[in-house]
Structures are given as structure tokens and as C-alpha cells.
Length: 281
Length: 276
Image (cartoon, rainbow over all chains, first blue to last red):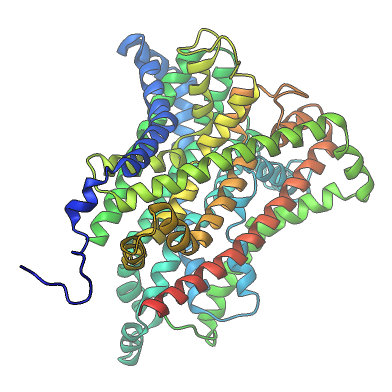
């Protein structure tokens, strides 16, 4: 017989714990699953079923309408241009926020989250007030340089740059913070230039975070609507096209474009998941 | 990495590029809306914000946002808990589902609500209208702001040492008491941070709310939809005043986020010191 020196009762065994039915645990799991299924899985299923309901031919016909194709293409290329600029400027900002000490750093670090906090529709309104045709800047571009900033692709890209700005920074900043200073110092001591140190020591470490942040901002840009409906109702990006189709009661046409947008966004989510899990493994 | 004072021309160049970029991209638009809305002083702003339909829009926005925040906070904590503390089949899929609202276009979200609950929808209820009514507005706001609490609380829960919980539980505290007294104080800053992000997202939503609510003046119109209608009606001062109000709210949100982040960092540091 085993004796327990401090306590005459046997210690709580795992079987004894399990004898109390784990209803609480199951209830929690059940409510989490139900909540996510209702709010997230159902919309995903609805879009796909609705889009493919009238068959593949109808789906392709709706998708290959010139207006739909142009809208998807405009969304893709403006989002891609934004992502390239955003990756460079976001990485640079994250670097500045981590490496340099300067007055106003705390304010800059706070301000970076502004696009998360401000309604994107208000972003659109602000951009019209700054770059619209009646303003000094917008007027200059239109009259002197001969092209429109707003109600044209440049306006869409500016709006997307605003909305997507925090993504790369907030992905890269924590990784930069955890980098050991020794490696860079070692590289610099043996005479490596700043650029060489950045390219060979820092960049490899932050690359997964840069990719993740870039992909997230790209995905965010595909779905952006509030800012773009204000700065460019035409030419139509995919979400504005969708909106006009839903408003006109053309549900079928809206469904086809939704399916494609959702598919791209889903592939991006999976890639981010993959990049992150591979990096952590 | 070690923080340095910029001392080479290259450092100042990099710093300068970042600062100019932020000034042009983020600050200039803010300045332009403040300048434009307050062109003739505060009076026109206050007048246009005290019109009955504007007040109604603000009430709708506030109440529906509150509903979305409550739902997403309670379920966000539960989802974070289940994802970090339970092992079961399908957990990875559940984890991916949480992020979908981040990449799901709000316009499509509003559209799915119409497919489900609109005229001749799949599940259109006969008693309570959802589409072009307030329940639809709240559902839309809930959908777009769903991930934030889970994504803020999850990482904290994942790194939390479970020993104190097990000790409390072994000493006879109920699971609820253990959660309330041991876990909750640790995840509290994360919850608050998630709540602020949820609030900001739900408050500012336009696409989904506009599609599903229809923007019926004095009924389902929210603050952002009022801005959109005011612009179309050439009610410029109305649109700019509401934009200014929403912008000021966003800046308050930013300041609260900043204060919370500082306390999150402090909590985590305290926690690391305590356990290490």
C-alpha cells in the first residue's frame, strides 16, 4: 500500500477528474464551432452555391462580361502596385521605428495605426478634399500634367496605400525587435556596409514577416470598398462593380465575381498560414 | 535590435523618407478634413450634427456597434480559449475560419445576408425583418469585426503558464472561479485591446451595412451611410461634419490603443518577471 506523507487523501487522479463530465469544455467548444460556422462558414458557402447555382456556363458567362473582367483586372493590378510600394515603405517605416531614436517616435508609432481606426469611407472623403479636381494638388495634376489623380487608377492606389499601410509595419516590427544586435555589429565590425548588413543579415530574418504583411495588405486591398467608392466610382474596381450589380438586382452577376474574389482571398489566407507555420517550424 | 541615434547622412535620409511618407499619406488628409469642416468655425458643424436624422444615425451606429462588440467579445474569448486550450479534430480549420472576415469583402458579406434573408431569400423570416432593417445592420457589423478579440486574446492565452490555474483548480476552486481569478486578470489587457479594435471596425463599417441596410434615412442609416448620402445630396457641410466626428473618434481610439498597448507590454513584462 502506498502512503502519502503529507495528505491522507490520494492525489487527484486524471481519471477522477474525467469522471466529472466535461460538459463545460464541450459546451465551450460547441459554442465556438457554432458561432464560426454561422458567421463565417455559412457566408462562404452561400456565395459559392449562389454563384454556381445556374451551372458553370452561366457562371463563366457572368464572369467573362467585359465589365466584370475589367473590374477584376483593375482590382488586381492596382492592389499589386500598392503592395509593392507598401512592402518597401512599410519595411522602411518598421526599420525606422525599431532602429532610430528620434523625437516624436512615439507619435509616429501611434499614427501608423490610424488606417485601422478611421472608417475607410472617411479616408475617401479626406482624399477627395486633398487630391480632388477642385483642390490645388488635384488641379495641378489635371491642368499642368494632364492626368487625373482621383476618379482614375492613381486615386485608387493612393486610397489602397492609406488603407494597407499598417499591415507590413505591424508584421515586420516585432521581428526586428527580437533580432540580436550582435550579428549586425559583427558584420559592421568586419567592415560590411550598411546596405550589405541589411541585405545579408536583416533581410533574411524579416523576409517571412515582409511576405505575410504584403499578402495581408493585398488581401485587404481586394476587398476595399468604402474609400474607393468615394475616390473612384469609375473606373469600377471589383467591389464597386459588385455593389452596382447588387443595387441593380443583378444577383447572379454579383455572385460570379464574388466567388472569384473570395477564391483569391482564400488562397492568400492559406499562403499566410503556410508561411507562418513553415517559419515557426 | 539596438536603438541608435541617426548620425550618418544615410540614416537621416531613411528617417526623412519615412517621415515625409507618413506626413503625405496620413497627416495631410487629416489636416485637409479638419480645415475644410471648420472653414466657417464650429457653429455649422454643430448645427448639422444636431439634425434629427443625424442624431438618429448616430444612435443606430452606437447601438448596433455595441451589440456587435458584445457578441464578438464574449464569443471571441470563448473561441480563443477553445483554440488554445483544447485539442480536437478540425481545430486548424476553425483557426482559418477566424481570419476569413479579414479578407472577405464587406460588400460580399452584405450580399450574402441578402441571399439568406432578403426577399425570396433562403431563410427569410416572416416575423422579424433582417434585410433593410436593424438586425441586418448588426449582423453585418458583427461579421466584419469578428476576428479582433480572438486574435488579441489568443496569443496571450497561448503563452500563459497554466500551472497557477492547475494549482487553483486542484485546491478546489471551480473552473469558473479559476478562470475569473487567475486567467482573466492576465488576458484583460488583450481583451480590452481587442474590444477597441472591434469597436473601431464595427463603427466605421460601410460596405456591408450599406448593402444589407439599404441606408433608409431615419431608420437603418448609420453614420458612415449618412456621409455617403450627404455627399450625393451635395450636403457638403453635413458630410464633412460627420467625417470630422468619425475622424476625431478614430484619433481617440488610437490614443486608447496606445495606452492599452503600453499596459499590455507592461503586463507581459511583469508576467515574464514573475514566472522567470
